[in-house]
Length: 220
Image 1 (cartoon, helix red, strand yellow):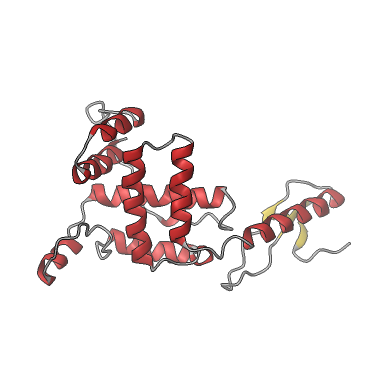
Image 2 (cartoon, rainbow, N blue to C red):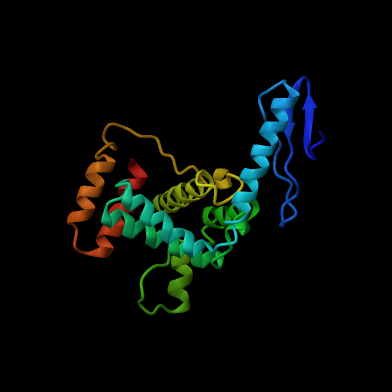
């Protein structure tokens, strides 16, 4: 039986998925077998998985964000304040990207956003509802701190990885985001994720909570 995309290389079998609707050919999948019949069975499994994912990726980023936040709250991986601030970051990124369909969250799209963030051309860090004149906005647009870059990148990466792990996008597209990692010293290790959530849950001022959320994420 011949299956399009199934091939053998140096004794091992691989499956190459077809080109997607964006004209991108996904990377070949190593089936980790030298047995042809097993490779055929595994390739059918991959085809079914890809078809199931394809049926869900037409949703919009904004809808996926709400599902992500609910899932994190339900699993108790986020406290209420952490969820609020994570949602605030993701909704700003979503607005910056124009609320794309999930199948439009490609490596190229994410990489372009990451480049804008690194170069401080990205406007996602301009927060609040106060009216600002053009000069103030321009200063804000070019004065995003390293901590903000790290925080936004970390939050976006976690969301993209969740999409991939839950079968809502076909490829892991978060590799182009800045790592946001910093050299940690004993002095900088001032809290933990559990303590961070406890602190955020006791803060009543939302702006202060957002600042603490970003600072804690940068140093953890």
